[in-house]
Image (cartoon, rainbow, N blue to C red; front, side):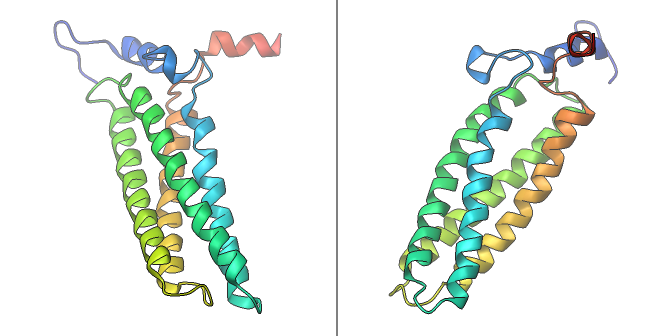
Length: 176
């Protein structure tokens, strides 16, 4: 990152990225965004498992209903995770590799969310609960793959760039 008069230095941008922009984003070194993303990921994983089971059981209705509910839980959880993610995004200096990665992470998550919403609509529009919605299932698989790619970038933000991770002097306390 090049600096111009009044622009933050690399050190300033890194320090800023480690601190919460608002207390609502979670305390220093313990952001809420990565905790909340477990809700949609878990719900969507379980929904796909329910779909797979539904393809092979004699009475798929409970699994179809369960998968629908889990998709909706995941959508609500993803919206909540997005709010916390936006708070963390706001702490990233413009023009940095971390911010560019975060923007792609956000775009992929938004795409996955839209695909899961479409999957939910397709599932609820089905006339009966006698068969798993193949279209809803395929949409969920594609959305899940997009979520996985986004998760990779989220890991890069935390583990490679150290976004919202305590600085090394704080981390060293655990090794004394």
